[in-house]
Amino acid sequence: VQLVQSGGGLVQAGGSLRLSCAASGFLLEYYAIGWFRQVPGKGRAGVVCIDNEGVTFTEESVKGRFTIGRGNAEIYLQMDSLKPEDTAVYYCATDVWGTACKESEYVYWGQGAQVTVAS
Image (cartoon, rainbow, N blue to C red; front, top):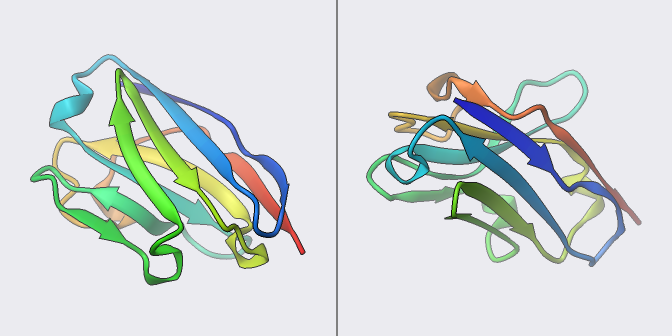
């Protein structure tokens, strides 16, 4: 199982970014998927996840702004109306189970991508 991230960077508040994660070595459609973010001094926090039964969890502060999806061997995160508080390192993740949008539920991780939102 391998996840390779792309995207990220610097954007002005109110702008949009799309993060992608190329998946290989497994059948993505059968796995739980998630996006997490981490700020200095804290652990990875779940942002948006889809568990192995297709149920979506969205962290309250990003509802209506962030969208998770999967395509042909790809996991993506569309981020709109970005705010300075969204600044973090973002990680994609996948797991066979992933029953909750928590770091401990996921085994396979992308390498991370910095997202910086300027005010």
